[in-house]
Length: 149
Length: 100
Image (cartoon, rainbow over all chains, first blue to last red; front, side):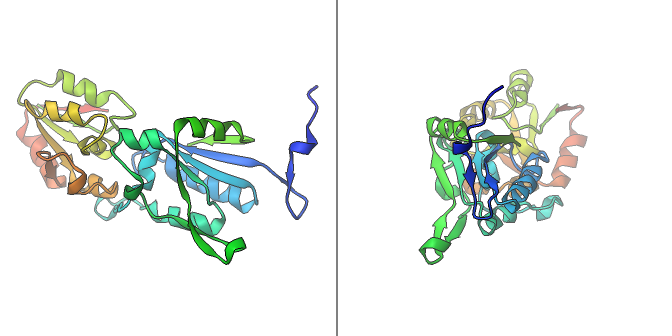
């Protein structure tokens, strides 16, 4: 049987094991229920004090597109929820550069999402980090749990 | 004939298949996630632009707005329609093919 490497486990201040959770978002918003379901699971993971990060690849990058307005189509607008992620300590949103390029998007086209760093006198910092496919590949390798939506 | 397409061109080949089979003079309406095909500067922009020489391309305005695609991000020459325009296209064409 494989031995558990206890030294690799991170323990938080209340003595609980913290795992690295990566939520991989690959679908465009509105067309399917995946993005909404994914967001709900992300918020649950964050409530359990886990080390949560999100990746946006392929059509998933469209979830962060600025100026989404669903009033005329009669659908729920999920987009404002991304703005609340920082308050739930979900502060690492990795966006793949290659996916942006294919879709004619740049960082400026995405929502301005921020979080406040308690350790630096609540300084406001950007949550979105644009990374290359190779960097994202490394990030995936570092996770304990990966969930796709 | 009216062709409606509802899948993202980056995630599915349905738009590509539709454009390959649509006869000259067709009306092609982009709805739901297919409206991403109306954006300029993407990997599929040239495919859509070349289809515009033989067919008329429309995109549903409310689906564009839901996805934050303003006219400044769109290929020029794509016609915007509302739900009333969608109905108009469906009744003025003899047939409708839905590329689901």
